[in-house]
Length: 230
Image: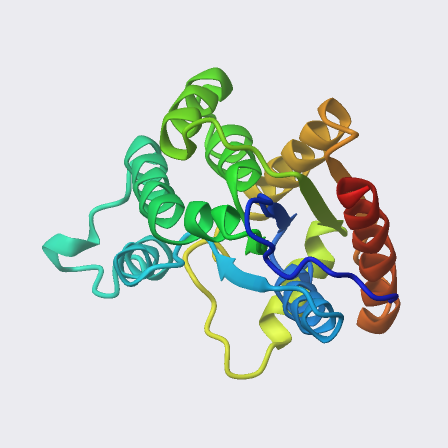
């Protein structure tokens, strides 16, 4: 990959790289692989995820993704899309304050599995909530912070959902069980966001073998970090 020296030098702000994509796109695997590679190259890396990233946010994540387990109980009430969005944003606010912002101040490379674009794709394009409202709420939650680089792992929805069903030891969550039409809207949302922000969002084909994707990720991030540090 070539030696990189982002070792958290005092006074130098870090960078935020986010990983986005539909269910089963392999983004979490690629995030973990890149974290290992960057650490081997001497980078200080903070690897995290959304929703979640802190003990409190992980509890909210469980509520969001597990959903009601007993259809006959009072807890089985459906989660309203606006409630869902606010829960995601509550996670993000805590995550920003406790993990992301401190790491950036220390000069780390922060790799985040999902961030603002997922909220726009899932709660905006998927659920039909107003995009501008979500943008304003996200600005409040992040204090205006935007990713420096976003890697969008794209593949057909049917392929991604099939991958999820084949994963060993992984139970399907509430989002996995959404309709294919919902996931198609989410995918179109991600691609629309990429078209609107081509300098920040890099679309990567998530169909090849993960080793080939990892090589593309490494090259993309290496070039980005060299430009950023230069």
